[in-house]
Image 1: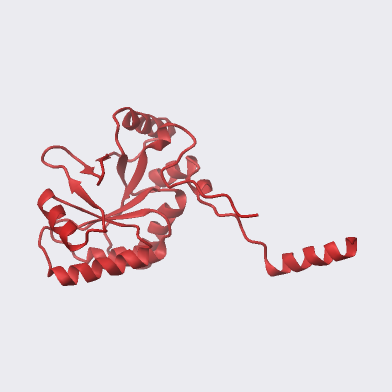
Image 2 (image 1 turned 60 degrees about the vertical axis):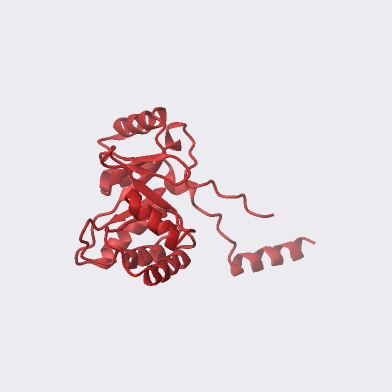
Amino acid sequence: MSASPLPSPGAAGAGARAVRVGVLLPRLLEEPGAWLAECAAYDSAGADALWLDGGPDPAHDVLALAASVAAATSRAQLVVGLPDSVPQAALLARTLATVVLLSGGRLALAAGSRRCAELVAVAPAVPAFRRLAPAGPGYEEPGGGRWTPAAAPAGPDAWRAALAGAAQRGVRGLVVPAGQPLLDALHRGSGAERHIRPSRPTRARVTTERQSTRRSS
């Protein structure tokens, strides 16, 4: 019998959880191993997107960081904020294609309106979130839907209220700073359980079951 299909990353048992959750990752400092482990923890906890933004003058190549995050995670969308300076188009296209391959097609970009148009021309298959400032905080997702910044959850009730309020406003997703409160909130929302794949029987178990069947027959 084939395994049942997994719920989509945005699916939820409660109506409020239909609002997607993006984690604004801290900037990489000196411990890449610990940083990647934190990224993987949010991915397995059920975050819908991981946002990397190095600011206007990033200390590291954010696309290279995205490639490492892609290798350490398996399901959350990767949204990468790019600086306004435009590298050589061919080099950028090659870099983006590499990260798309490593992430299994989960890469998305975030930039201002003008830069979004340039990115679409360079890599039309990669979604580009349009930065809404100064019109307002947040990003517009390709095809419609707005992601807005939100504070870290102060507790279960505050988190449920934030999700419900976002759903009522028609918000597509919330971008929340990384931290233990958010990780706890994602776990409480059964994010981890929604993405656990059914375990395959081990070879020893299969052999034991076959032997038992032969004896019974």
